[in-house]
Length: 125
Length: 281
Picture 1: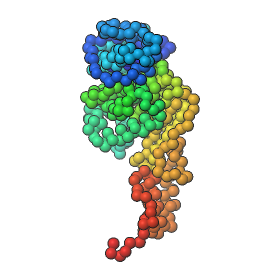
Picture 2 (picture 1 turned 90 degrees about the vertical axis):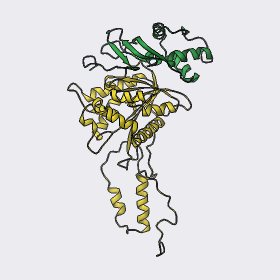
Picture 3 (picture 1 turned 90 degrees about the horizontal axis):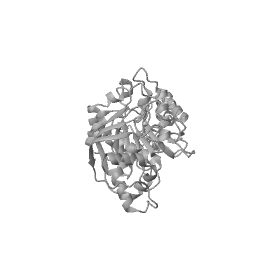
Picture 4 (picture 1 turned 180 degrees about the vertical axis):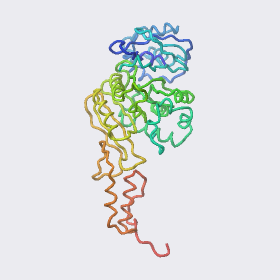
C-alpha cells in the first residue's frame, strides 16, 4: 500500500465521525519501489494530501527529506515534486497495521494489502 | 460472469465463488482476459476523462487486476477493492501497479471525500443484489455502497459500472439506490440485440447532468441504441423473414443485416451480393 493511498483512507467503522477519520499507520515491513515520475499527477494530488497524516506516517517510517507542506508555486518546482513523488508513490508498506483513532479498531496489512473487512456489528446498517 | 449452469451469484458469496481455481481462470484463460480487457476499455471510454491527464481512479471488484492493468497502461493510477483473498493473491503475483484493498463494497468505500477522479467496475456490482448473510438487506448494502461512492468521488466525476443484471427488477433496484445516493445518469447497453455480446454499463455522474453516451450498435436506423430497454421480444426477425424467398438476394441481405445487428463483422453489401452465379460455380 502506497502512502498516497494511506493518506486518503478513512475509517468506515459505524459511528466514527461524520466522514470517517484518517487511520494511524504502524509498519513493520516497508519497501521502496521505483516508480516513473509524472509531475502532472503529483501536482494534482498535492491539494488532496492531508499533511499531518503524511508527516506522522513519514516520521514513523523514518523517511528523510519529506517536505513539511506545500510551497508557493509547487507546480513548477521539480525538486519539491520529486520529493513528494518519492514519499507518496515509491514508499510501499508491506506489513503493518492501520488503527482507527476513535474506536481503536485495527486493520491488518499483509503483503501490502490492508484488510478493511468489517464485522457485522461495525457495519453502518 | 453468466454461465450456462446458472448465475454464480445464486450459489453463494463472492469470496467463496472466487477461489483459487476461479482466480486461475482470470490469469490463464485468454478468452476471459480478452473479454475483461475489452470491457475495461469500454468503461474507461465511457468515463470520458480529460485527455492526457493521469487520474486517480477506483476499481470496484478489481479481482486479479486485469482492468487495473488497462488503467495503468493508459497512464492512470488506481486503487482496487475486492472481497476475495484468492483473487487478490493472484493480482499480487501479476505484479499490478495499483494498490489493492481487501474489502466489501457493500460496507462502503473507506476513503476521504473527493479522493477519486473516477471509478470503474467490471462484472462486480450485481453481487450486491443477493443476500448471503441473514442480516444482509441488498437494498441497504446497495445504498451504502452508492452513497459512499458518491462521497469519495470528486465533484463532477463519473462512475462506470459494467454489470450483469439478472433481470429488469434487479437493474431497477440498483439504479434506484444509485439515484437515492445522489447520482444522475443511466444505463448504456452495447449490442442490445445479441445475447452474447450484450453488455450493460451503469454510467453515474456525481455532478450536473450530462448526456448519456450512446450504446454500441451496428444499426443506425430506428433501433434505439441507448436506454435500458429490457424486452424479451424477437418479433422483428420473424416479420422480416416472412415472405422472403429463400436464397433470394433480399434474403441474403436480410441475413447479413441480422448479423450486423448482432455486432458481427459482415462484408459490405455490393452489387455482387446475392447475385446469381454461373452453373459451374
